[in-house]
Length: 231
Image (cartoon, rainbow, N blue to C red; front, side, top):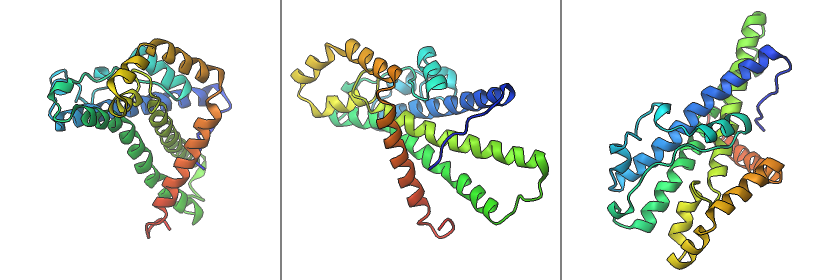
């Protein structure tokens, strides 16, 4: 399974932090743009008119969510504004808009496997055996970046499936629960959010998230290796 690799000294830790910073900016931006794009396609222009279809990270980042993503690998951005009155089928379209963000991250996680598998293939046949220390370090850094990008996007997708506002699972929950039950649950959204964050902070969700991440990663690798070039 892919795993991001720990660095052992200060200089390497700084490089890792820069890598994670770049990954977070890309991942959260695409996540939020996917929400806005889906809402726009379903008839709601609110996100577009609010500038939330921009690929500029500044349009989307929430400081606390960004910091959590940077430090812990899970987080959130500013919720994309939507007006459900513009949807033809509000429940269905709200759910689809909510799902678009995590799906975008899963697609990013899958696509990044392509350069990873190409690099692995080249390494196996000895293409880089004589590149020297600089070349070896550069290739190692690329592999680390790609594997970290892969896993952080899977984790971001899984985290956002929690049915707690402002996470995307709450929009899916709105689509499947009766109004009375949904709004009854949402009365406690602040407490539910605190419970989720506490469980994450205490590490109680580490194993299930890690297990699911490994399973999804393994499934993606299996799918990719079905292709002739990677098999």
